[in-house]
Length: 199
Ligand SMILES: [Mg+2]
Image (cartoon, rainbow, N blue to C red):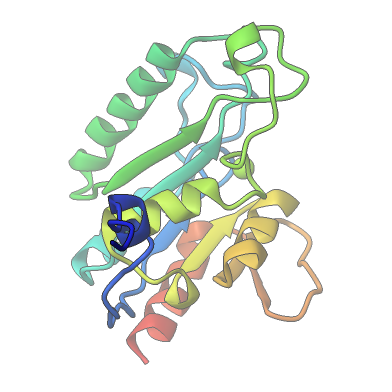
């Protein structure tokens, strides 16, 4: 009698998929809203000029948009998960005024130097580790190698590297690295991203 094959064996099997749909993974602070440092309340949300319009242009093109944001302020005891959720609800309300929306919000509450025990650890979700990008891939049915990561920190570029996505670095000084395109703002980068995804 042969050993019955359990579900565990089958879970590793996936039908070949044809996914090649591009998505856009946006950092939050310094990309969509001003990085005021650990933004945990809506009164500190300040949109960067043009970012809402840029997101609306991605929406109009039918490209899924996810926010992927490290929120170590939770591990550091500066605010709670509920506060981050409230900030994201507020961001969505404001974006709606511009005819824009975010398809998926992902945030990482962990940090190894945190003071809140439940969140004081390393995490595969903390950028530049790939956890949030992989979650977005599954939730939005996108192909990360066809997708774009946009952010203003090295860990955003590192996230793109980790998952084989293309990277846009936002900053006053360009990032001189092969395979990374630099723009001052999301608004300035949006037409380029749209053109590259369409081609
Ligand atoms: Mg940032």
